[in-house]
Image (cartoon, rainbow, N blue to C red):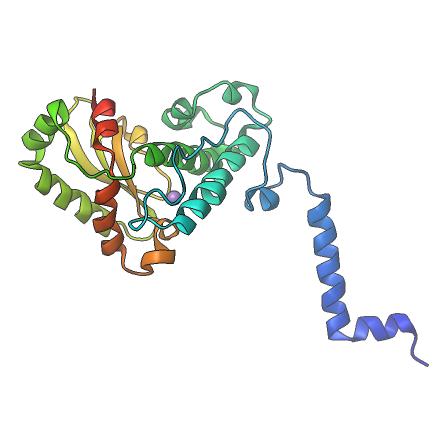
Length: 245
Ligand code: MN
């Protein structure tokens, strides 16, 4: 005679169902600072907050589509903020620091959370800078000191654009291409992997182009070059110029 219990454990579907139910129960019981929950963008209390985008999600159409902007800001950037709050949750000294100071002072961050802080403080800082670097109807080349600095360093605005585009195309995997000022104030084009920041090299980032696939894949799929070409139509060079000052 077969008991009900034996029937359940010997049926693959039932076994799978039991395993899923068990996993769901453990997720439901997980605290809010659990990484599995935070990766899905759930809110977490902490010193760091997601800044608003500053414009409508469709403001940069057709160059950057509304769905990409929504997911990129509301999910990806939110996850960096939440994961950063979780990483520093039990470190009162780190909670007092600015995101810039955390990135510049990674050596002072405990080993067990250093990678989490590097990735998520970097992600939070880079994206905050990124949203502010874009605007509807952007793309007008800068004037003033930034224009002079670009001409001095690269020969012309178009040559700088070519170098920044080449840096963006040269990132293998996920990362960023940057126009930065080095610690002598000279303009440089550089790239960083993952969510690393020029701040980690004692450089000042002026403009970053996000070349993670999440920044462009919904509209451009594998055509990163088309995305990089398009994004120059929405760069707010006035804001970049203000950072240069
Ligand atoms: Mn991104």
